[in-house]
Length: 423
Image (tube, rainbow, N blue to C red):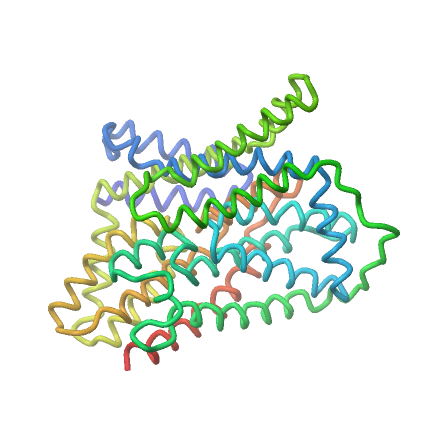
């Protein structure tokens, strides 16, 4: 395990130090995992989350059509009419992203909301970096609010045999939805504080931007509806969400080709797919596959469980905050998948209800990704969007929003999770 741990740790240090070269560092590290044999060749394909990659590629192409239609500018005009200043515009955008993310994958949410945020920032002549970071971390937060909001929520729901409504009321007590929403309220206050100096009034637009074509908006709206409906299917392929996004992109490209009748109608939207962001994710997936193959994730999960001893509250505390720390650096899906059976075994051994431990795992693992710029796919996607626009995101830019935002979300989740189900 130790060579895998050293390579993994060194890679993250390099990615945090040389943020401009993250995709190349991640892919180089993935290559070392392969060449060294730490990631067996027969596990390469299964280590990559094809659903996430297909969803990103499909949604990015759709978003290019969406931007070309001028709908983001129109939505930006509407939001600017409703808020008094730049500070409230940032908070409103983050809350808007959070509401969507409670029902749609976090990455897709960032891709859909980011163009609106960029247009608002262009109109206000302000730096979009904190706006997009706020959208990304809000999307991650709300992913734990419902059964369909995030893969980790789906995994937990399956482990406890929960229905969609169980996330609202579970065993006669308030469910995860209310735990997350309290965190969302506090996080919104944190964002308002961080943007406290942005009191500049929003200028009145002479007229709302005219939308050139509503079809891309219908396609994006259709993606949201289909992703929600797909989440209720009892049996579906792992790449269902990715297939939905890619299929809608194909529909959009065919429509655009028929409308414009030239090759650019297809090529220009495809150029909007950020190859560097996809490369970074591929590298991370392979690295995590490597440390998983070497037993690192399972060992860490077991260590966390042992640290809790036989005290259920101490065990709950270790799971929550240990999951926050781990998810700040690795994908939470393999970690949660490993921890679920461990928690089941611990609860059986201690003859205790596993509910608080499971909810603690979901809270810590889902929200912990907001601590670092590479802790969640939504963060990576948001930073990739900014890079395409010519903005380089420094680690300090992300930390000053991500860390207080995470604390504001995790602390109430930690307290309420125990009050509702541990006491």
